[in-house]
Image (cartoon, rainbow, N blue to C red; front, top):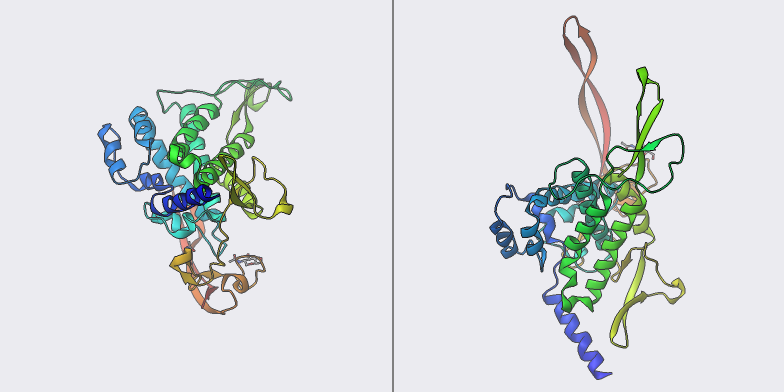
Length: 352
Ligand SMILES: *[C@@H]1O[C@H](CO)[C@@H](O)[C@H](O)[C@H]1NC(C)=O
Ligand SMILES: *[C@@H]1O[C@H](CO)[C@@H](O)[C@H](O)[C@H]1NC(C)=O
């Protein structure tokens, strides 16, 4: 019992003092051409790469520009996905500085980890099929029997390669020995994996027709990935139903089990979190909340972007804004377009 307690204390101390999370996202902010392996050591010293990520970087220098673009895509996509909610993923753009909402083991953190891991898999899988990388090419031809009148062909997104890289790169910091048995490590690895599973099940079949003048006599199809935003929307649904978990020692292993025993066990496809989130209404750095003062809201919506919900009952301002737009465009022979400028008024609401 006592050794258990000591273990827990050591772990807690470790969590508070050492654990860092998705600093690698800051790679997306660095402007550099990846030419030398020493660049990997350099960003490791700035704590942007963690654990073994430096070695991966050295070995896969040609992938780093794609890791950078995956980071940018993840940041942008997270913000688009949550634009209409109080927590709008703006804190992700502060990397390598991380606020408490992304380090406390919150529901929001679970989403962000899943999305970033998915983004790496997505970007690399597409870079392979686009022929941008030396180390990989088209994905394997599907082994499913063609369902319809077509042949497998073309160049499939290389999911297998993309996901393998995403797994090693994103999970690396959490595979250090000391983290294998830590709540945060277990949670983050699980959520990363959910992101990659979602990528795997969201592949779509894309086709191209060949044949005389637009007829579709011959059709070839391949497996491709949907837009990252679609993957992100799917993950958002998992965010709503994420499972709260607690850690418990079972013998020598730390397990995460649902906090509410009536919840049953969570599945491989469920996001998990360990810390309840604040309502994000008021600014409070201690809980990672920026507050919603000044946010735009929609007074006629009853959804999360409605002013009642967004402003947490504090009320809002209405402003009338003049907008201008190009209109009445005419095509002139040959070859330019002339337009007029139209002005119109719109109503905008902002939270108090
Ligand atoms: C997101 O929320 C923060 C804090 O409420 C706010 O400062 C920021 O402008 C918001 N971003 C967008 C794009 O609405
Ligand atoms: C505000 O919400 C209403 C109702 O959901 C919707 O029809 C309208 O398009 C929204 N307006 C804006 C500017 O998003």
